[in-house]
Image 1 (cartoon, rainbow, N blue to C red):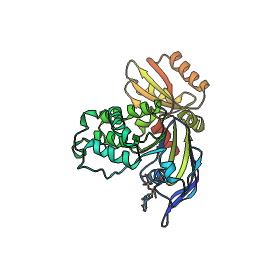
Image 2 (image 1 turned 120 degrees about the vertical axis):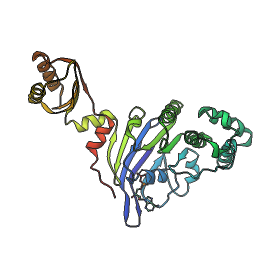
Image 3 (image 1 turned 60 degrees about the horizontal axis):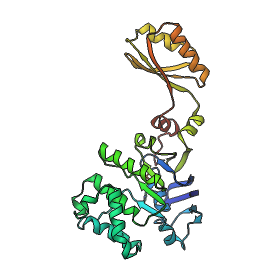
Image 4 (image 1 turned 135 degrees about the horizontal axis):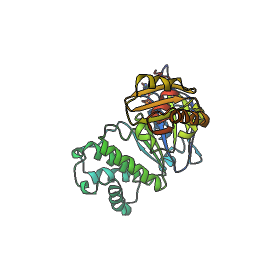
Length: 310
Ligand code: ADP
């Protein structure tokens, strides 16, 4: 649905994007992850057609983005920037009406679209409130409603959950899942990894203007293949000698934790997991749970990125 090929963007001497490639599939939620300053917003601004001065190619819905088709492509795109100068002294319905007009939604359809979008983001009751009177979570939902008024196929969301409390964040993420089920292709940027893990189908990790990984969590797992984590639970606290004995088991690389809960990192492969489980049982450790697990997104991120900033 979106292809980015060797995309470069400079701000003076700063190479904000150093020739990145990305591809986002039709109807997927793609998590665009990277630390502050990595180049996420720059990429999203180019995709949203707002930044024109760049090198490389952008293909959206089979159209090569260029100066002549910007307006055509904007109809397919709903863009929610990270910093928005929201108009605070107008009513919620007026705010959406303004964007309906901007996107040339026919007058006969505007009222219904405004009502539908407000219902979708659960703001119907605030239709006649002033925008400036909404909470932060409601404002984010209104901004999302604004990106939907022209029924775009693609949503580009730059840190949509930033600054939200946990409930508002979970509600927003559920709303994004609903939008995916309605057939939208969603590109969402974030540096809060825990909230992206259960939401996104695929990820792109960017660091200092370079893509360091693209794929699903399973793909990352295969690429990293440098070990397995196993969570261990015991019915009593381990003694120091027991602790040391675990570290001596062949294939165990390191062990963290205390009391009754530990995580060990071991050599890669099912055989080593089996060997460790067998050893713990045969040696009569007070074990009650043993669960090998994949890297979570936080661990993947730490392994793949080097902490580079520019
Ligand atoms: P992110 O969204 O990942 O935090 P940005 O795309 O905003 O990163 O920024 C990438 C780099 O480009 C940063 O070093 C930032 O300071 C710089 N940058 C972004 N916008 C501008 C601008 N308008 N002028 C100069 N430098 C910019």
